[in-house]
Amino acid sequence: MEWGIKIRPIKPGSPHLNGKVERTQRTDLDEFYSTVDIKDPDLPNLQSQWQFYYNWLRSHSSLTGRTPIQVINALSNKTPL
Image (cartoon, rainbow, N blue to C red):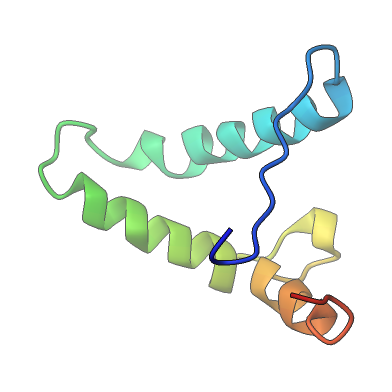
């Protein structure tokens, strides 16, 4: 609530929302976890690097080739806090 983020749990029987969660988990599996050792003591740092890459540098086809941060910035004037 401090950051103005609403938590919206996925209701049972909501495949349109569940599909989005499964898609991002699949991307994490294919592009991140397949390249690291999950027993690596530096894993938290690697996850932070991956998160930065995923949100700031990696283009997304569902966002017409833009990064998530580009979409957020484009919508920031239209989105009230």
